[in-house]
Length: 364
Image (tube, rainbow, N blue to C red; front, side):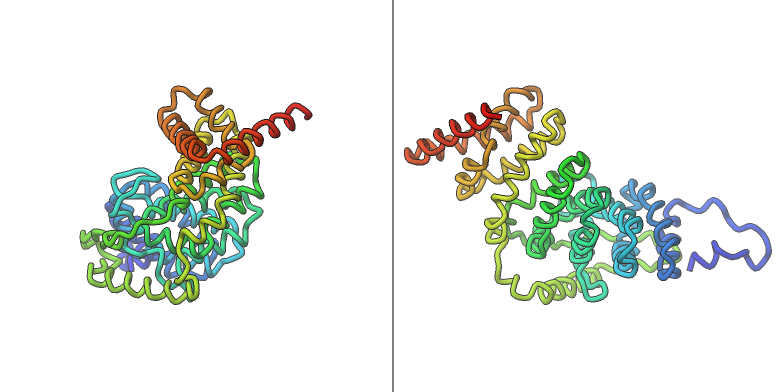
C-alpha cells in the first residue's frame, strides 16, 4: 500500500519523492482509512481533509474508483455515536454524489450515485439506510442534519436511489429535522433543496443505473475496479436493497408522498414565514410547492393549508427580480386557480377560508 511508503522511512534512509501527483492523495487517504478503520481520530481527520480534494472532479472520479463511499459509510456504522465523524462523513458524501460537470440539484445520468455506490451492503445496511439512521440518531444536531440534507440533494437525483430514499423514510427524516430546528437557516435551506426532487414520484428510466466511467490512470496503491465488476456490484446492491425494503417494495412512491403532503406543505409555509427575508430560502420553498402542485390530487391540500396561497402571492409581489421564484410561484397559483375555477363549491369554501384566516390575523 502507499500507506506503508508514506508512514515509514524508506529502506535506503533517504527522503522519498515528495512531488507525487495530486491523484495519489486520494489513494493514500483511502489506504489510511482502511488500514486504521478502528481508529476514530484518523477516520475523522481523513474525512475533514477530503472535501478540499473532492472539489476537483477528477479526484471525485478517482475516489469513486477507489471505493471511498463504502469506506466512509463503514466508518459511520463503526462509530455510530460520533457526531463529528458523521458530519465529516456527510460532507464527503455531498461531494462524492455531486453530478459530473454540474452543480447540486442538476439531473445527470453520470452522477456518482448512478453506479449504485450508495446502495451496497454496509454491515447489512444500504448506504442510504446508514445515512437515514444517522439523521434519526442525531436529530437534535442541527449542523449534522443540515449536512445530511445537503447530501440527500444529490443522492435523490437518480430515480432508483430516490425511490429507495423515499421508501426508507427520507422525507420523514427531512421533515422531522425541519420541525425540530425551525430557526436554523442552513438546515431549512438544505432541507427544502432536498424536498424539491423528493416530492415528485420518479419516472421509470432504464438509464438511471448506467455505469459511471472509471478512471483508469493506473496509479499505484489502489486497484481500479473494472466496469464489469461495477455492474455486478450495482446488481448485488439492488438485490440487497430490495431485500431490506421487504413489504415496502409493494408500496409506490406516490402512496408514501400522499400521506406526507399535508405535513410538507405546512412546514414549507412555516419556513417561508420564518425566513421571509431570505430570497434563497423563499426560492427553494416556492419550488417545493410548485412541484407539489404538479400533482392535481394535491391541489386541495395546498388550498387548505393555512397561509399557503397568501404566501405565494406575497412572494410574487416582493421578489420580482427572481425569475425562478416568479415562474414557480405564479405557476403554482395558476394551477390552483384553475382547480378553483372548475369547482364552485370549492371556490366558495376557499373564499370563506381566506376570510376566516384574515379575521384571525386581525384579532391577534
